[in-house]
Image (cartoon, rainbow, N blue to C red; front, side):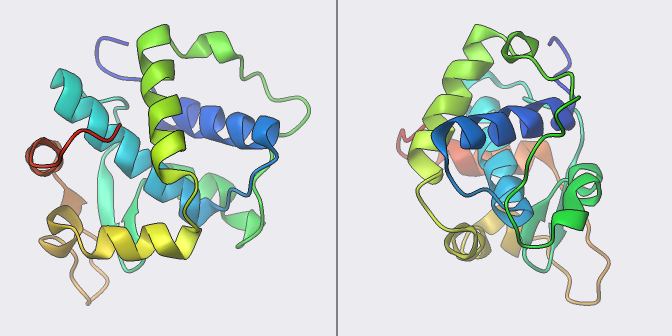
Length: 153
């Protein structure tokens, strides 16, 4: 994990966790959980949790590859296929602890609630362009914003 996980591995962790918790998890909500997980990892360790960049889309921060992988679900709950090879051991203990804290902090909010939260935060506000360009939100700006927050995750 020296250079970070694949975002899809972290996405699958959240999907599997939501399934185990019998909790709702749409693609929109997943995207926001990925953003918060990346932010807290950057804050706590200075390293990214996953390699892929987050972009400023109209509904908040998004990891495009993960979005496209699950867009067929629409606004419905995400499920891993029965033949998916995800294992809990794909994510180390340190990252797992962080992901559980992120879930416990942000997982209780609706997808739209999380969307609205991210819309009020500088990383998205400073990079969103309504013309549809969807620029990257740099990790250093995400890290600095999360450093300004009180401990939550």
